[in-house]
Length: 270
Ligand code: C2E
Ligand code: MG
Ligand code: MG
Ligand code: MG
Image (tube, rainbow, N blue to C red; front, side):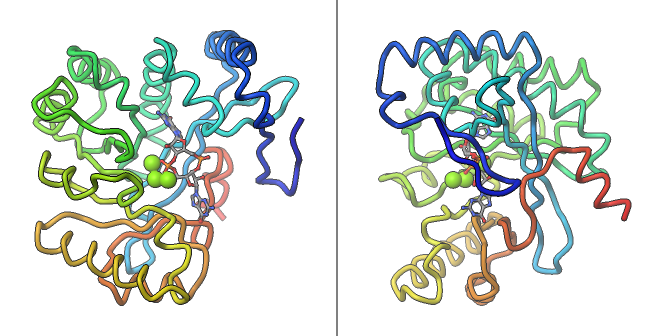
């Protein structure tokens, strides 16, 4: 029920199966078991500076399913978000990333946090307790929040982000520009990092308007000032445009794919 193409291929659930309520319940049950049985993995994708040095890593969860093979988070995170599973998944991701931190060469690690997790009033408190328990310096953690879901002003979401930031955790807006209230987001919270959505990077060099939007985002980032990272950099041409626009961080298949930790250590040692 999926296709494999190359070593980075991820087996997908069929779209029609996903729409099926019964199928969702199956996935949910399987994922709950997978969490217990250690079938989840974190892969790490490097983020580069303009000097082409690695400045941080993003942790991306994968599900190594016994029958279906490697499953992309795009297929199970939305299902997890419909129940308390997202909290269990999020907690697993945080613990795994903290445990892996010592093998990441002193670089910070970014973890994706679902807006659903932020709705719990004690989220930041539990997050902080985990960092203390695992002896992790909060300054080495970046939390990425996707922009496509609205943050409610003065709600638990913002209080949690404030509390994390007070600890020294940096907060990034993920997929910036993909939602319909991107600028509202910037007004509502003092983010540390803006990640330009891949959809704007994709057509750089071909689309004049996308080039203008990317330049405008970089201008805003510079004057705030916040860091700006481009996602999904796949070609030299995109990379060149982004540098010209004033982008300071770069992530994408051109520079480095998400890889298991073991694989990355091998690369670093080579
Ligand atoms: P994201 O946080 O925006 O992550 C970037 C996605 O783009 C990743 O997909 C990454 O593999 C992919 N990517 C990176 N460079 C390129 C490129 O050059 N070209 C293309 N086409 N794609 C690129 P992935 O790993 O499938 O993750 C999809 C989404 O799932 C993530 O988007 C994030 O929103 C979510 N996700 C991943 N891990 C977690 C997690 O631990 N917790 C939560 N809540 N969500 C997660
Ligand atoms: Mg992300
Ligand atoms: Mg993103
Ligand atoms: Mg994205």
